[in-house]
Length: 98
Image 1: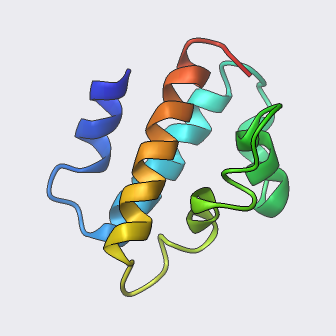
Image 2 (image 1 turned 45 degrees about the horizontal axis):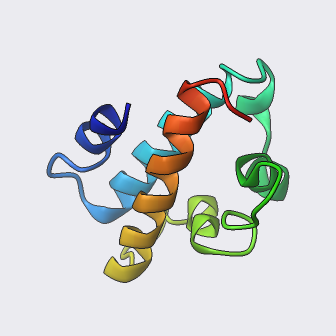
């Protein structure tokens, strides 16, 4: 699952496109644990991605998902932090873990 995430979210895409691709993959994976999860918006979506323990999406690097796909430029450090966080969460969701 991690390899799929890396291929889909990196492959020569511009940084905002990488954020959008990560968001799209997370939404697809979210349906594996909740069929309605992909329809969540804003903070409700980030809180879903947080899961039960952490707040890495709603209060951390994951918040870039809210607008990073629309920015003209994305800070490379923020993008790398998001990619690592999103990849780990993607794997969890694909394995059916909330």
